Image: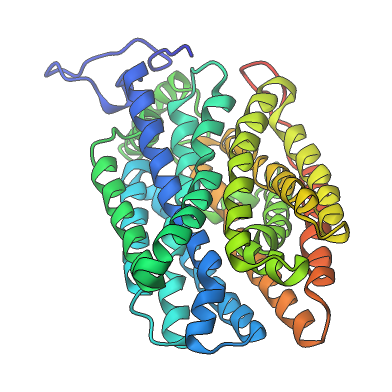
Length: 448
């Protein structure tokens, strides 16, 4: 890994201090930010997938049927979507560091209160606020894109951080198997809340992104009438001409970005239909569609998410070689085929275990390339908004996936067939949607 400082020599203010937009990004800074963002993502995914993993147990405790369980998950995901709508504005107005702290605080509250849920209504309301912590990957996509600007093989670096998804899912499945018999499902969420609070403390010690500091200063200079100074600083930090403008939702739908934004949003929506089926509700699919016991399903999840982490590293590495956009297209297309084979193939452990692992390898692994690609594909001043517009389609995809599953199950369709129509088919559709996104020149070498 090689690093450099800001794109221009560090200059001091008149009192001798370094201006925040010229603070050098050292190897130590990159390491610290990477570690904290990784732990933050693990904590966020731990809480999110913990809910899906323990949903059959929660449903049994409250006396919900399979269809009612799917309905509760659907309504909760609608709440996640509503909460997630505000994340882009938070990042572009308050900053990357403050955004991370605020989101993890919201996630800690959601995790802790889940253990106090008294029924379906309270569970839906509480789980809606998990939209804060689930949007942490938007912070990663934006923050790390700006911190890694001069890092060689930055796609691989980001893949290691984004690998927090399978690690978080693995921790959720592993700790569920260990702690559930001892402390029950309610206290399991308290453990998740404590992990999020640890992240809040660590994030408070991180630096703000120099790119965001430069955008703020460009905006200040323009508002003060110093147009030449604003233009010079924007050029110094390789910001687009419109950097420093207030940006907002309208900017990401202007000509030149409109098709890209829509295609990314559709890719997230369709892929998260598949995520909802194979990852969040993975235990339900394995138990109901393949006849695996719940205890064995947890073991399968642990093993499969271990392979899923390798998938993140692989897709991040290959993205540096052939381009991140192409990596995502190929990964999701292959994953759609593999998942269909898993659902229609033999119900024996020797077949299910590796095929489910490969399903997660190609389903979640490409996100290592996708998230970093998204940060590259939007101008810096709307990087938070653009990334979040696409990202908020994740809970919409979750809503669609849960709703379709609930409707099909209520209509008497088997879980296996329903999973194929919602999980496998929509994974293929997400790969097709990526074809219509922007081609971005990857400064490290390959085109994205």
